[in-house]
Length: 241
Length: 307
Image (tube, rainbow over all chains, first blue to last red; front, side, top):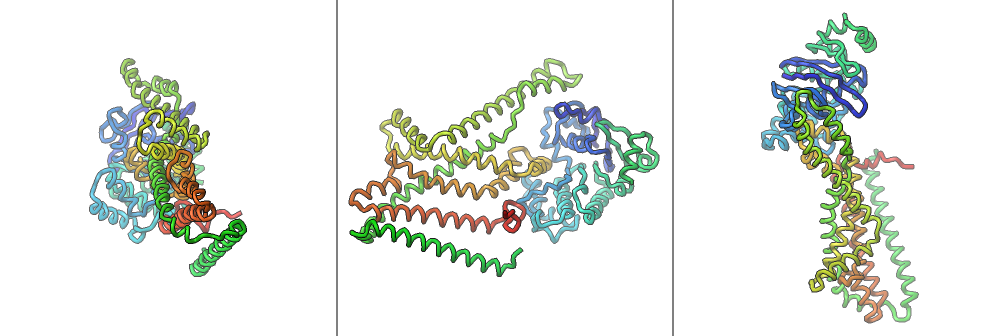
């Protein structure tokens, strides 16, 4: 489904990603953990080409997507993204936020999209908030709208960049519940998160990233309970407290 | 948050205050004016007879101002956008391109791949530089000089042109307001959070679409107050067109004032008309702004810092 081969990324003198190889099959939930500055966000952004990798190749459904002949806009339609700071369109209501992509990018009719958008808002439990502007919603509600917005494009996979890190503790649960439901329905997901409960119950695999390289990879219980590497052990013990 | 009733009452009091201030000011002006015209008295009959001429001139003033403003808005948007462009030195772009050549790409192919990079990079560079220069020239020279310059250029090249003065005047005002509006647009575009454009691109929008549907609609709402300011400024600045003989409000006022030596009558009319255009406009815009305010965008009245 998603394959990443030998990705390198530099920001000026900073070598952020140092040869990442990764494969995610359909319906899998991959959780990426790692200390801040380890390149997790950059790796996610390299997959939907919000950041263009300097070297290496990204495949989505077997298509080499960071190829010069492929439009990055097309790639981003295939892979949804949910941000740490929600980034809902401030000037649009929840419903309009969900509708904007299908209407303006895919050219679907407004009527069809509106039906669909309402269904999606219902799915994330926010039917009542369709007419509300982002500033009128709590963080948890905003993030759920953001998930609906990503789903509206019928993506093949969704990337989550620390979706609960900017939330007040009381709102984390509702967002994780929506994500868990998505995973159960078979959505392919790559999630950067420090929510260990979510990671161990939902993730098919955990990847530990440090200083731009994958240090360790395995099923949640392997990585959390019997980590092979010292660095993983130190990091895991820190976040598990 | 103030309860709605108290807010309403406060607004009414404020309106009364404004009214009182206007009445007092006009009264004072009338009093001082009376000291000057005391002997002959204020000739209302003259004003009643002559005001259609001034309304004609007012139409021209509004026409020149509005046309310039609208064209200037288009210029302002594109120039302002160009000025937000980040310039990466060509050498660095090419260096990176060569550095990250994949091992299996032949050298000639990599070189060929650099051509569009060079074109877009130099194109962007000159676009940005031209935009910068334009704004500096407009800001750095007096409007007066710009008007006279535009007029002179037209006069030398098309001496027989009808409406030469008006065309030159509109051209100068357009160029001028375009420069100032570009700074307003630049500030507005840069105020919109980077995450908004990123989210737009993440749903698959091109840069142009992200601008059209996400960034610009937000920026426009944010820059309504400075744009109003610019329009009012331009309306008043259009009085400079009297130097090139455009029959706008100030020009007509000046010639009429001395035709029958009705200086106070004429300028009462002229200033009154300017006032009647600018004040209701700013009030109307303020209303529209309040009416269509979106929570979370722009000034939150209850939350701005009061120091």
